[in-house]
Amino acid sequence: MEGSNTTLSSIFILRGLSNVQYLKIILFLIFLVMYMITLSGNVLLIIVVRINPNLQTPMYFFLSHLSFIDICFSSTIVPRILVNTLAKDRSISLLGCAAQMYFSLALGATECVILAVMAYDRFAAICKPLHYSIIMSKKLCTSLAAGAWTVCFANSAIHVVLTFQLPYCRSHQVNHFFCEMPPFFRLACKDTLFNEIAMYISAGIIAMCSFCLTLTSYIHIISTILQIRSSYGRRKAFSTCASHLTVVAFFYGTIMFMYLRPRSTYSPETDKAVSILYTTVTPMLNPIIYSMRNKDVKGTIKKKISQM
Image 1 (cartoon, rainbow, N blue to C red):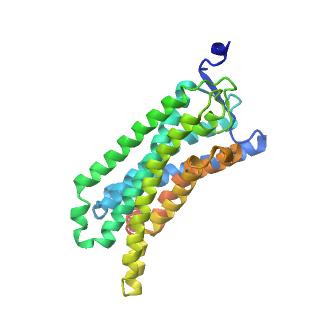
Image 2: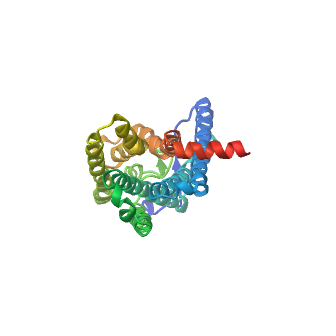
Image 3: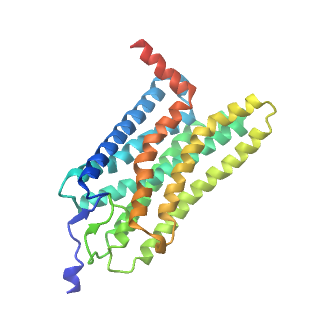
């Protein structure tokens, strides 16, 4: 009997955000607008970096990676939200669910690491300006980016395999708007302690190590900035990392809350709210934050518009 109840179904049902008709229409429009802003903002940022020779620096190299991650991350999740918000059939295949979980986990982790590398880049630029070009060589930048993508995608594959080896005998209705690990743990009829420990270890190694590297970099950055005598020099130095610091605080805060809190504190509605922040809001805000506070990016955009 147990075998018949715990066989892997080929279909899961995503319950989504709301069943109220007028709220569904409002949510659809909100997410559609956010998705369009995310795509246009990040694509524009990548184009600007590509066409401006002055932006061919390590900082903008990693910023381009961040924008590409945000495009892929948002595209992994938001189209499914849009379909499920209006459609009566909210089912998703086992393969589709596994693919969504794999790419969302991998891209989220990669963004963590890239943000940490960007913090190290700002540390090298502000604290070691005379050796910056040597420290942040093209070879090192390429290696760091490649390492981030490789490690995070391999890590994601392990978690997806472990998650979908669980027997789901309680229900196949996922109380969430996309396939994420914590909601699936609550559906399993087997103890998920091993999976949760693996998730904590993984999140600890990737998120916490990235956060610690970022924190250490900014401690040195702030210390160096405070030693600058002129107020103009301090403002100029801080302005080069203010945008990154804003993005880091927002992204790390939501990710750590989602993946590093005890199982007793899990709440479906809280999970949904937090997930919306780092899956849809952050990818939309990143290009806006970097563009609005960056004279080079704004200058390139204005120049191209005037030439049209």
